[in-house]
Length: 480
Image (tube, rainbow, N blue to C red; front, side):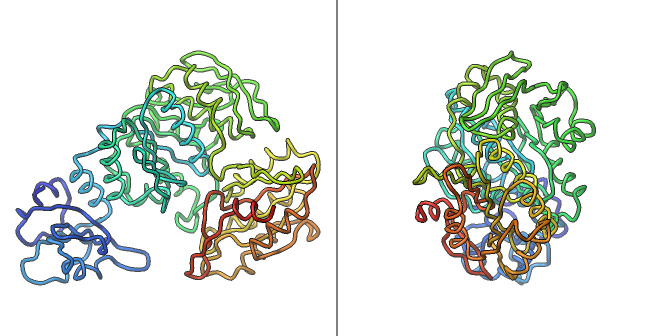
């Protein structure tokens, strides 16, 4: 594609060079530059992409886009823009010929529940004989290919490339989890969604956003990109605000257990065998029986139900898919053990998510409920004490351990969590996560339940710049 066509519509501050050159690829990582590439030099928190312009040119880049003046002299084609990430999203979409327009697109945002809802929508689409791709926290699915996810929502260049590959391999739809960071950094700009889902909003990522108000404002940006329906949790106060202030009534469907919800759960029940409810919707009423436990999973099912219904899928197909669905990786995942010991692994890493999971497990616990968790280093420190308070109130005993301490002192993180406990007899600190899991399994009997929270599907741990293999589920199996 010619450079001048590629940057058509991009707001430029300065341009230099001949823009009739042919562009064979667009890339923001200098290590992946090949001859004919337009290199997109992004500003970063630690390193500015502009410092890699010379390396990109040596690898064969034929043009550069940057927020700062280009260091290369002569007539080397270069564009300076006010916002490189926004420009990158526009350019990547144009280069790949706007692949999202050829797919049915479902975007899911919110603090908790995104992954479970995405897997539910995926199962429903498959039951309806669709061929969905998926981009999310656990993995990326492109046709028959399954790739481990580096992050919930990749960069715009990667997203547009994946969407193109999905279309080539026969996908007709895509489900995307969309993080607040992705929205703030324009990674999904130029994608119009047939369905946008808002699950909830609770404290998280305030190290990045500063306040809950800012966090909500960023999350709400998704709903300016909806060409179909906005599916919003009206049981959540931020969801109600989204419906009142941002989403047009004729473009919205609310879901929840309140009497005003468009897609409403009636008579919710949950026990050790699963969860059940009756769903009233604009398309009819039907019974749902999940193999997943917990009231919050019924709420997730309502979100998926509303999304699928808005796409024209029959409610009988929706119900059957939800009824047949197995555990989502790392989401209240039961790990079979010896001597009937019951252990669950979950990704809960906010106080609200931990509360929901502990309440779900309390309803099926005849004896003690024990939880193991930590908090990530270099992240929202305000939620550490809150998570400690939830554990103190909802569990019988807690083992505080490492999550991903990164560059923070593990002892400091553990102390911040323990500040939320009303008694030091309710917890102990075992910073070695493997030892903490072994200790938890040692403490439980056949009537007790052990929850290992925070990392879920993750298979690594990060310590001071070093990433080591660690999998909660595998560690439990080894301990058994």
